[in-house]
Length: 469
Image 1: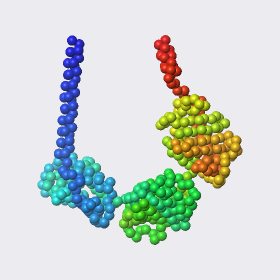
Image 2 (image 1 turned 30 degrees about the vertical axis):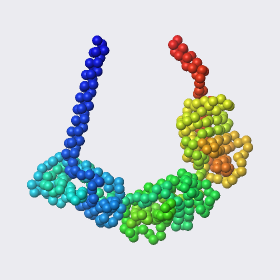
Image 3 (image 1 turned 90 degrees about the vertical axis):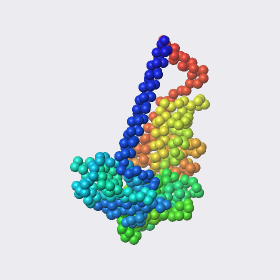
Image 4 (image 1 turned 120 degrees about the horizontal axis):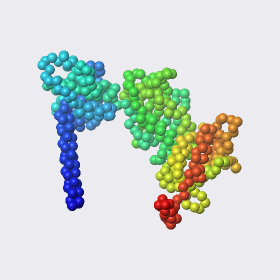
């Protein structure tokens, strides 16, 4: 009897759920139908072949699609694909917020006698047109009319702004189309005579200076430089004669396919935040934000690998250290999981493995600030030593004496990396942070012994008995 009642209740719940789901689907269908019915135009964005924009404030613009979209008037230029996609989407989704009715020949009342914006577009062999006029009394929408059919309606001010594109909006702003992985070499020439000449080593991420091949360049620094050049964007466009005859910096990029690209920049006057530049891929000079100028090096030395640890944190599998405050020997047990090694026993899992990952990220991003050249071998008996071993067995070690309490300057250290030992200078605050991080990672503070087999089961049983009592 009880089972039968439960089955009835379950059936009722299923029926209610099905009814609710059906009502929800119908409600969604009705909403979609209402939204589609309110659209001013019905067309597929891919079918559009041409767009014309006439504005009271800007020059008339014509965009045409042949093999790809381009601006054909008032200048010939490549188009900003993101802006174009947004324009097509806005046209496709522009909707009537409210129908006003026939204008009865009184276009002036709606500001449609002299439209503030006219957008025409060609789909197949049919032209469509949207005219917009004045704002409504509460200034939330604008009066509009489509295809000159006499029906006046309101579109949102946001839709108006999305359609009211000017020439600067629609022109291509990317200075370069190449990607960093396509670069084979690059040269930087400064007006004062400084030069940088970098070439890729085969098809790898390694780079060398042609004029200073002994320098160990940072993969990250070169990659960041190329990424920065790749993502340069024009903030505005200038007349062809705006670029000075002699640029302050000239960057030439050679691609793997044999093509080349070039950037020339004229430094702005002090205090100005825009620089004039030209790209070999654009037809006219442009304005660029000056933020990127500091990242363009004056010498290959600026690209040298000064990281205390070059391996990325995820590649490091072992950390060993010795300081006056203690020592440690850690091994990676998995992603974000470290263990402490003591003798031949199995590694004890660290409770604070996240601190190890934070420390590795800090070491990867920390650089020495100066070097005294080759140092042979680290000094014997130095009280502080730290070694990293990556997944490929490559070792990096840092040895340093206690900072002199009478000074506040950098600390002398010996860095062994890539088979060479260099005497380097490290910021005092970085050395202090290293010591503090190692103390926090001390195995005596963070090790949790692992239990296996019978001993683990015995521990679980004992705990259960204690809980029972």
